[in-house]
Length: 354
Ligand code: ADP
Ligand code: GN1
Ligand code: MG
Image (cartoon, rainbow, N blue to C red; front, top):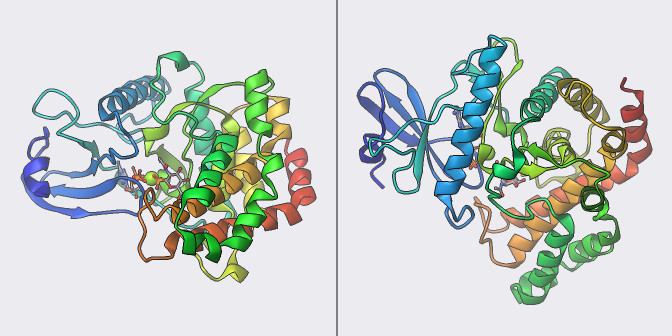
């Protein structure tokens, strides 16, 4: 694809110097565009996954406009603290399935959390993001991927993969399949809470993995929550759980040496404290009571998603080598077991935060 030609169809400043693949996202193709004036991020939206790029884009434009209003009202930097979509010369925000954002400068985007203070700041930023969207009209958002964190439905899809997937792979993964299916009785607690109204439905990010946030390169404070494709009505617990999943495991989700995979209680504490503070008292008692369950549920969900994708022949996540999804699934299962082992300790941590 001629990225330079496409980038020139956006309303960019300066002359293009380069346009190269960038970042480690598993879904979209991300290109760093450097011009004589500034840097941009251009992305090809993965239309196998996001089947309505127009509606997705409308969501993002509305959310970023709304956030800019909030950021401006408290005297923040509207160009740095949320994404800025760049208009295309055709008047919209898309050229085919490609879009462009201003590059958020002066930040780092971490693939691993290195210390509790980074993760505390990450928690504060994700909590605050959610707080800012508290009064966004949830009903008006297009539901980009229905049932995205409906874990019981993810289990049903996983069972389908166990029935219809690649035979040799199903045999190869017998132990992991058993381990996951034997735990399926506990996966509905959060969905049940949403259905009964015990847990509030909010506008949530739904993909709060640690490389979806930019931290200031000097202060390491959370600056900007990115990757807004999955912002939809959901539970705060999804956002809490996914960050715990991706950030408390110091080895990261790609590690194949399972002896290095665990849930750091210290990092859990740092994020939980930051998230609760960032939400400024808006988490309900019921939500607080389910924080450990949420972490467990999202790790479980991710394990069935990775393993299901492996069984089906790697159709969803981008992989770097043939067994990559299997490695990721085993990694998530190891993390799940460690959360089970540390359950009481983690519950004690949540109770200890005022
Ligand atoms: P994916 O959906 O594939 O995960 P992301 O939107 O998360 O795509 O982008 C992939 C990576 O590109 C991010 O993890 C981050 O490193 C980088 N990135 C994305 N948007 C920006 C931006 N506006 N400024 C700077 N870096 C960005
Ligand atoms: C994907 O888009 P990215 O790379 O930030 C996925 C998440 C998974 C994550 C696992 C839309 O996140 O749900 O948790 O991979 N995003 C989508 O690494 O499916
Ligand atoms: Mg991402």
